[in-house]
Amino acid sequence: MNSNKQSPGDILILTADGTIERIVKTIVFRRYRSLGLSSAPSEKSVQIVSHPGRDPGVYSRIDLLRQISSPAKRHIIILDEEWEGSPGSSQIIQSLAQKLNNIGFNAAPNKVIVATPSIDGWVWGPIQCFLEEIQWLSRPGVNRNNAYSDLLSHLEDAGYELQNTPCKKPKKPKAALEYILSKIQRPRAREFYVRIAECAGIRNCCDPSFNDLIRTLHSWLNY
Image 1: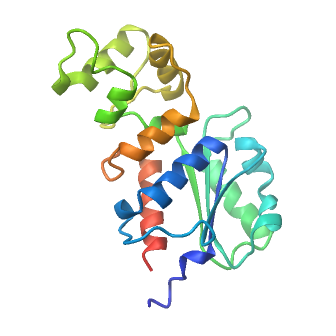
Image 2: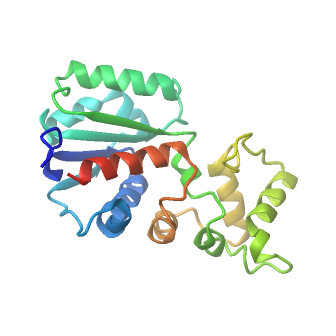
Image 3: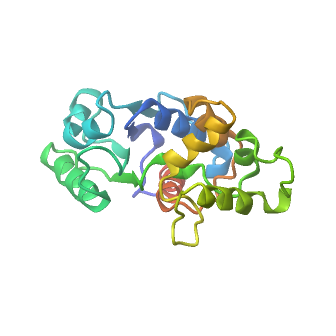
């Protein structure tokens, strides 16, 4: 065993809400083969919990870890960039790193992952199950081979700006998703995100924060 790596029993993942918690649990415990694991870790060996204070709580009350964890464990902290009072992604990462150090949680590696602007961006992409879940493939006249481009064009026509990056997504992924789901009278519920986490190819996402999470999980769990 590599002496620089510890067993998966020393990992605690703190998320900003129950939706992120369920997404990460789906990836770790059900999509474990995509992380290079031959078997799923137990829920006792890898703890995944959500902060009661949501994103602002994670940022301002990271000392909650003193009650539920120990400095010897490795921690992954996951929250959105976009919330009222947010100082922005860079400051969130820098500040949380300092706060973890201040409470003595610096003996083992920690990783802060900020979804920019929010975890809603994780589901956007030319992913068949995403397009199926929003019922875009069943729209009259939609070419299945060009369905995602058609969806983005529809969003632009509706006034939603797209990111000026190779990762073609709306700048406001949460608002755009609510708009699309309203067209099929479907709520933006937790189960929607879990369904995408169950069926999407996690190695093909172009979202930097999601890829950072997958790289960290792969590295820490493959000991």
